[in-house]
Amino acid sequence: MTDRPAPSDRAMVPFVDVDTMMRLVHAVGLEEMMEGIAACIEDDFRRWESFDKTPRVASHSAEGVIELMPTSDGEVYGFKYVNGHPKNTRSGLQTVTAFGLLADVATGYPVLLSEMTILTALRTAAMSALAARHLAPPEARVMAMIGNGAQAEFQALAFRRLCGIDTVRLWDLDRAATAKVARNLAGTGLTVVPCDTAEAAIEGAQILTTCTADKQYATILTGNMVGAGVHINAVGGDCPGKTELARDILTRAAIFVEYPPQTRIEGEIQQLDPDHPVTELWQVIAGRAPGRTAAGQVTLFDSVGFAIEDFSALRYVRDKVRETGLYTDLDLLADPDDPRDLYGMVMRARP
Image (cartoon, rainbow, N blue to C red; front, side):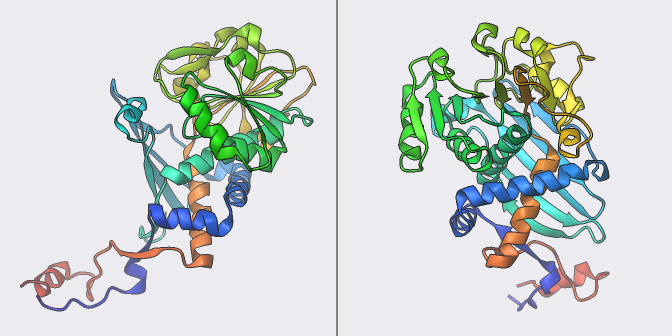
């Protein structure tokens, strides 16, 4: 085969695979990385109006959903591919997998391609804790974690880092999942309390996090389980036909969302009238709207995940891999000597 000239530096795309992402997490520190991602999200939420925004493009099936989540700030374009298939765990597969890309708007050239299964777990936890830092009772130190799947440990550690919780109370229908979280969090400094029921888990908790996987209208928390003054971090209701909270909780809570056109389709508020008032979280972060206004208020972050958060996480990774050198150059883009002679480049590679 004819030797092909080496691609130019600008044609090489930094690529972060799963192994490299794990190495990056350990090089930076897990909690430090979630804190850094949260800071990038906070910065980008403050300039929310500079971003293109659209509900994610979703392909739903009985088994799950496959989605594309695009956005751009006019200089950098980003998207994430992500799936959600709750039945996957029965065959040893992940419920959620993802990858993402950043590109230079001026040239259209990609500047980063990255795995996002791990990064989405970090980003989701960082977003939850960031929202709670603006909405939860300031004295909150105990969190109930209802649903002890793949996201649970990340949520607990992000809340410890960003919000100062010191105790996490665990419950899941699957006792093995609870045991897994308790085992993984041993030695982290958190007090971990496995519980036999959801009601027991929320006893004494000021923050209630729900993160279950089944794609169904579920009632993980009923109205009589939620007392005054708590903050609810609803993570699991993230597609049409999937909820976790009783409707009467929603009607008495101050509700905060990422992007209403998406959350009204996918979030807990799909149970409410289309004009039910909600507050966009970016407005709280930017100082344009109040967060928690009274000690006895029930606040709810109806989290479904939004493209700007993934953009922020990818932006964080782009900068960190430049600092650490933890990436692989990927020969993804054709780079002929003469941009008009792609055919000639192909022919020079013939056997």
